[in-house]
Picture (cartoon, rainbow, N blue to C red):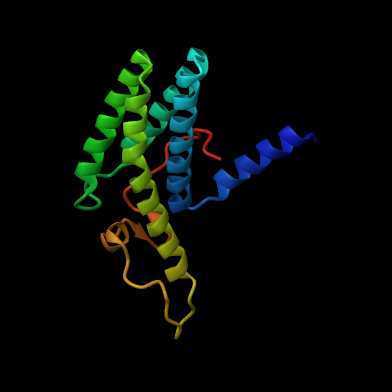
Length: 166
């Protein structure tokens, strides 16, 4: 097997065996990567690559939006509105080749990504101790406290398909 095939197999297995919390953080990580690549492509005048990256970013936001259960926690409605805003801005930025709009979207996404990573890590840390042991993780962040992740699963999200997140 060549290196590309091995990498593809590794990515497929990583996605197939990931927990819902890991899948969510993978989506956010890939979204930030797509936004960064989109800005770089626009700055380099590479319209085709910019379109590819920004379209993929839109697909990820669609996935996040479609899989969000707005009844799962109080902040879900606001998050749904953020996703709608991101979609509108990404479409407009792609049409106008506007790096400022893409950067503004990235600036919105990064804190969300970081919060989901924190919540996912707390689920892992809190799930690790055996009976009689305590976790040193401290109090959970707002998403974890709201019950977004229970038993290692993101209760507000149901991934719908493979978006090449690995």
